Image 1: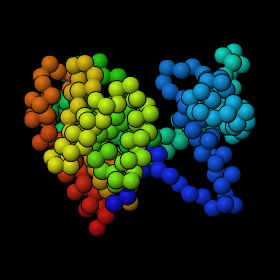
Image 2: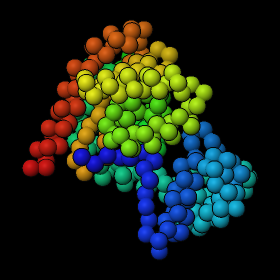
Image 3: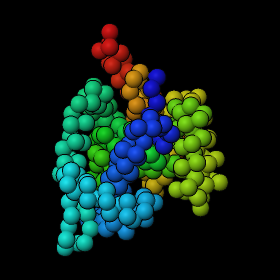
Length: 266
């Protein structure tokens, strides 16, 4: 089983260390851009990444020349270019897991009248690869492909954490603690409880937004990052009640996807 290790330490050969460090820093700059931000200045990027401003200035120039960033003189900052969109399209269209999971997700979503999503981890966020809004009040569902949600707060994230080996988990929890320092003591207990539930029952349930309940289960596939399935609803029902109703369908969907992928591997 190959795990996607959030924040895992990578050791480079000495002759490649400086080049790879620059590459890693450049990728961190790209990660600094979030929805709702028209543009970021070098100072704002430095603040978000923790990199020296001189380093940021050098790397944003390189990223502009490489076609990944656009310099917006009017806004006085940088924007992601369409190149990034093209890369995401290639990734999604080339994902065998998404291709095989999508028709099954659509069928279950329509039958159950529930939102169904597929996500993977990236640092301290989960990224949606697909979201199918079939639940009641679907028009209120604002989650789109590529959207990030916090690992620490969501069923997706906590189910993902349950799949990590102890060393990677410890490192990841340290990253999450820095992001959620104010509420960490309470949050940590919730995370551990939901990880244990996932390991015992195959899923966990979380209500991290008012009126929304989500349950999630990991898809652990050989030689692939861990993918996470979730179902969610706008509802007034309790977390326990929603989990009782949705969990059998979620587990069946997970098993059906894994079986479909296993048949392809034969």
